[in-house]
Image 1: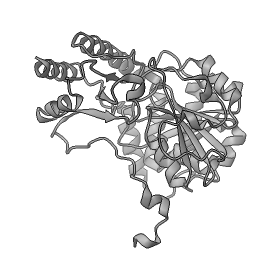
Image 2 (image 1 turned 60 degrees about the vertical axis):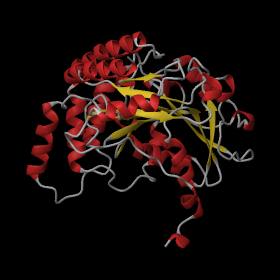
Image 3 (image 1 turned 135 degrees about the vertical axis):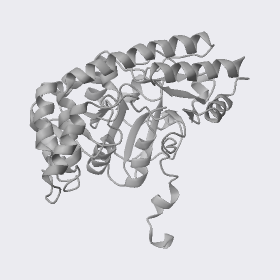
Image 4 (image 1 turned 90 degrees about the vertical axis):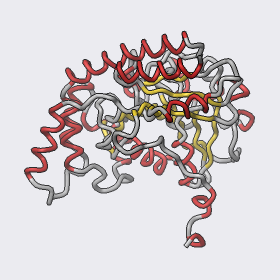
Length: 371
């Protein structure tokens, strides 16, 4: 059947998610999931919705969630688009804004799915390298610059349709100041999507920027800060005139009744979220401090993970990852070809914040390996 599949699909490697072992096989600190159980109100909402029956289609726009999120976030409900996880939102945006043979820009290293979405669309990625301190060069906010490409094929004459920028970034956990983001948006010839998957763990968010310019949109997920990675629910914040056009692009019923009910209950329980946030931040501080004492370079993270690079090249990040895996702990070993020209090494370890006990045991294993 391969002769019938589009050539750009055959050519692309495909996005590879983090390892998902069977339950109980390993302690997962590799995919930035929340280690704590979601709010009990979520489970109550799921049970109630299931008891009412699932024979009818859900509300096509997730109206109950839009209204609840409007109250919590202080934005009008028609500024919100619901999605089957924030990856669904990113897919909708790519389909709507990036033409075939067009161009999508992203910072590098960042979320590699952005590149995959461009490839599926039959478009190219322009990947602008972060500076060593995880800031971005001025030309990130300019027209396409072929000399700034990290890798992948450039299409210099292709129109730049969309820019993706995660804030906080993955894998670094760092943020770009809001005034800098506004500068980029004002100078770019296309919209800027700020991916706020981890914003609930940061010092501030960028929602107010959407009010300042229609060129900025924000994606969010309930996977991380609401402990709902297994549910698949995300949303977009953008001007209502943009939302109305994107509704044309999304699947007819892209969110099911159970996920809408659960997401509505989750975002309504802000007491749970704030308490959970404090636990994650406390463990993140401990994880950061101890990894630094073990000799790793660790940027100040504003997410629920840390990026850890050992300056001694004789210390193999992959060997640390394999040692931890052999002892029942999964962290994310990541390689970013081309990044070594900036950072000296092209790989590192991204460690998700676990419970205090999980984090302590993981760190003890790393210390034992290094000794």
